[in-house]
Image (cartoon, rainbow over all chains, first blue to last red; front, side, top):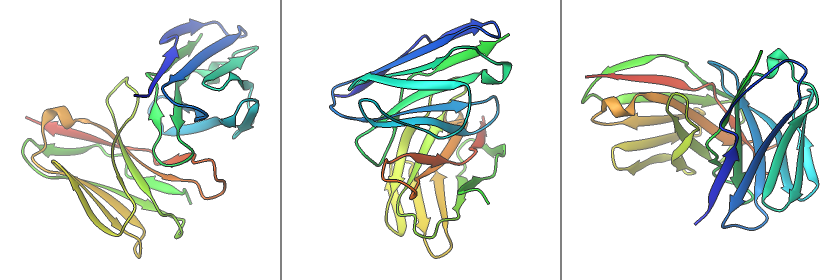
Amino acid sequence: SQTIHQWPATLVQPVGSPLSLECTVEGTSNPNLYWYRQAAGRGLQLLFYSIGIDQISSEVPQNLSASRPQDRQFILSSKKLLLSDSGFYLCAWSEGGGELFFGEGSRLTVL
Amino acid sequence: QKEVEQNSGPLSVPEGAIASLNCTYSDRGSQSFFWYRQYSGKSPELIMFIYSNGDKEDGRFTAQLNKASQYVSLLIRDSQPSDSATYLCASPSRSSNTGKLIFGQGTTLQVKP
């Protein structure tokens, strides 16, 4: 069966520091991968999606970036965090359409 | 106009009652809809999906789709305190073929014992 893992689960970072969140999927090949962000009390905002290695699309302009160095690995990064980057970051996968399956999430607090 | 809209609530129902959660969408061509449940501090989990007009039942959950009126509902029968969560409605974006889902803001359900 397919599983998705995301880490770290929680992190507190100062403004201006770098960020790296990692996500891996097991049990499937060539999944579509997604990064969503959920700000406190708000809905899910799609940040990036990827349909294959090195094929990444950005949904909103921001100081975040994403990379997919391997088929089942998706990384969200920032060189310099802003206060507004605080939120709950969710990695998700799908088999080319239909339902999304989410990882456990990473809660980021920028101080 | 947002593509998928939900009333944020909270919706409060007594234990054992039927909870009715609603979602409207703007793209008349949308074909499929998903309901996710999200407990506080946790990630969303899929509970139902529906593609066809009418009702789809799964245990205590019933999803209803009315394409003519562009709304989707989720009914929870015999509501339990453990059903207290935020329920998210989602539909695939038709602007691309990547399967990305557009989510509503979510409705918070409170089931009171």
